[in-house]
Length: 360
Image 1 (cartoon, rainbow, N blue to C red):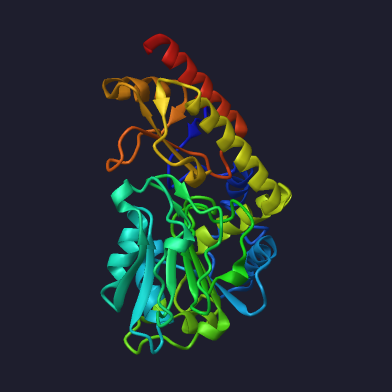
Image 2 (tube, rainbow, N blue to C red; image 1 turned 30 degrees about the vertical axis):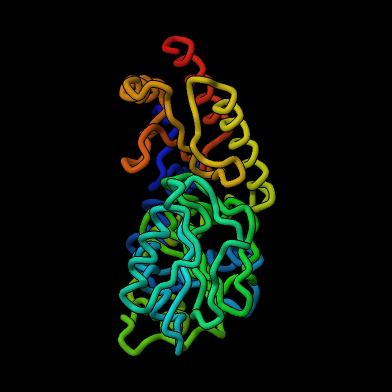
């Protein structure tokens, strides 16, 4: 077996320890004689998996007791609708801070259910920076304020928590969820698709303050109704059992790494290495303002676009996979989530240095 360093933006690389545990459990989970994929979600075996996963996630993030933790389906895109359907209450409008493609998509979807105000946006800068809080035009009458904590495509990330005053703060944290400690109590809702730092695609984590429950519109689909899902322990319908189980194993892996403080230090070290190399080169460049750079997704450009295809082909042969940038940005993108080992970043830098030597 020859595993590659997988720099995919998602579905992304998983910790090898987790994959090995999945392999060992695949045919027979703890003597039950069946796979997690085969057992009833109502049975004691899976209920124990679900309860342990929630407990571990609460511990990792220090989730306050007045928050529900839900394991849902539909991805973050499902929550683009789920948030306004559940959180607006008697409000007619919501504020959106747009710093990349996913913020744009969230704003567009919310526009189906409420009046959307753009409180701040950086599209005119090519989504290469973050708008300072002082430039945000927030409304005290908004139902909530929404921001995307890390834009996977553009590679911009908030390293600070916005202040929304008395208005509930909502964040799509899909691509930096569990990469660092988070002030959960500063948010009304946090949601994240699993396929970056948590597990395989299929499960979506929603953390919602309990006083925001019970506001759902009458026409909210039951699978998107936070209160209904909370009352059913996220099992209103058959949940994504296998993805939930793998997420639970990932939570345990994170605890063994020392928790979110330790993983944040590792992520910062990986990012600093890669950005440091790019900044020190005349052959590569990163378009994002230094203060807004993501630790998870690092886009970079070659001085000569004509070399892009050669770079990707040679990188793939060197065991460095899925480095092509998003079509809307071009160039390359290295996603270096929690499970990407530091050795993978070192290998990428070594390859980039050699490629520059031969083609610069």
